[in-house]
Image (cartoon, rainbow, N blue to C red; front, top):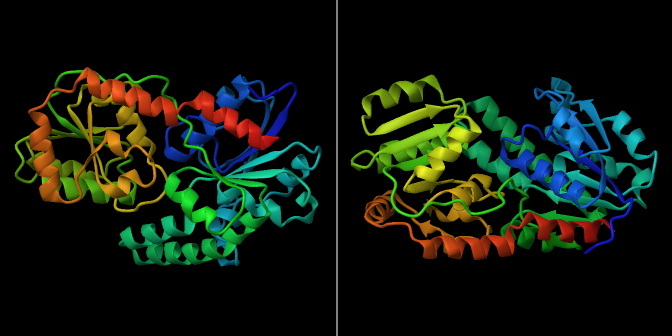
Length: 375
């Protein structure tokens, strides 16, 4: 085990990582917690915009600094991506220059300081949460609002150009095998460390549930597309109960589902309620139409649910293919759902999950690999 006596680390987060309730900050929060439990002295720096300062973070960090993200429109009209230019802080730079501790930058969002020559000799590690220009390109394709579509396409171009700043990083940590392959084709010192997450053990139940579940942030364009697809193409004539659960559903979705007696909408469930929904479902369906990053909600269903039906883009280098049932079109989805509703979820399935997830997604093992990189 790495020697961590009085070892310090700066972590620069693109957002306040508590509450840990969406993909990116889930990885940040459970990573810093795992590091703290290994004795690493963490100095957290978080950009603040819409999420409150969190006392919870002080349990795991020796210092926590917040910086207001500059959301003014002037940052749209620079050569830098907006997600980068809006996180430009001279105060952050000065705080990081007060010592020589290694720095972990969360996301391309946080990488502007590598342009500063004063950091040339500093050990800087970047956690790549995504291939950002691909992600924004997919957002543009999914967006119907013409102004937002233009913004996403423009941001994608800027992100692709800005990405070369990663040449200055000591290491790049990819979050999926697919991302690792991409970054390793362009940069040196690329390693794969899966997402950190809250799950400690597989809690799936054997037997049968009575419904299919889809869950996600229902205000996100990608998830809205998936829900529309399920309603219009899959459950349009499928006599199986569907539960859709998630944050901030639009009023139009609420109204639409009034005419679907077999589809139930649960808006803004608590963490406990969502766990119960996943745990009691017979099938969790996870779909995406953009193969970017790692979908942490897939891990949630594998640790806590029964059968997991996905399309290939959902897997996206997660290395859990063998634990999921693949269905890439509406006909396949219908067939797999009908087939699985007749099957019980067995202890054998649970044991297979335990072995695979313990091997790949164990926070304790993965944090040791990260500590080795920190040096």
